[in-house]
Amino acid sequence: MWTRETVFGSLVYYAFTPLWWGFIFTLDGLSYRFSGGYSLFANRPKTLLISAAVSLGGWFFFEYFALGNWYYPNSTMPELSHSTIVWLYIIAYTTVWPAIFEWYTLLNCFPKLVARYAQGPKLNIPGKPLLYLSFILIFAMVFYSYPLFWVMWIGPLLGFAGLLIALKIQTPFTALANGNWSPMLLMALSTLLNGFFWEVWNYGSAHPAMPMTNPNYWMYDIPYVNVIHIFAEMPLLGYFGYLPFGILAWLIFIWSGKVFGFNTSLLANEKSS
Image (tube, rainbow, N blue to C red; front, side, top):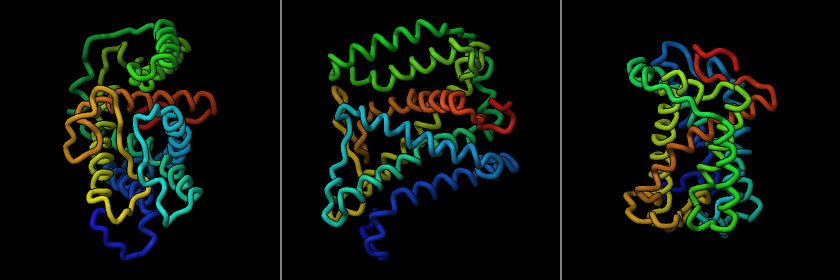
């Protein structure tokens, strides 16, 4: 995609998702290596597979309510039919959650990093106020979508967090109440690290613009902060949005586990949940 060398012909148009799953398995292999024998694929393959299914549904939600903050200029490639491009997008949605969770398991391979933020201040956040605030923000966004574009990320995060806390379900906020900030911070960092690869690889796949090789290429139109682009379509300040998104993705996964009855544990030392 980067070199525009289409040695496999039209197969390059279908390469986005296989390339990302290749990267996901690379992260998995690194986790296996540095943990001494644990990874999601090796020890929790069902969890990894389910995370792909949750990713498909979860990212479809964000695409549906994107508010025009990002778009796909290559969605009308003459080489591919509209239905083919739609299926390419849908299949690509399966890579989001697994990539984040693989980064998280990899970062947890380093005990000093995990311990660094494990003894912080205790922060016990009540669930119902978060839930009410979520409803208010999402309701307001319906009428003021431009200035409240950020609510698409923060509103659901507050809502899922509030619901799970109110139901006394284990979440990263549970650890926060015990002074352990590591799960939340490492998940946020995981998403930021993966965001770097998302953005840089996306940018490289369409610069120069011709010939087009990546139908999944995206661009941004983010209110107020759509400036300062460093080898990425994502504006520099936009990277901060990855931090809460990782936590939101985790909360959605935990909520889905409770609704559909599957284990959401990601680490070797976690109890089944």
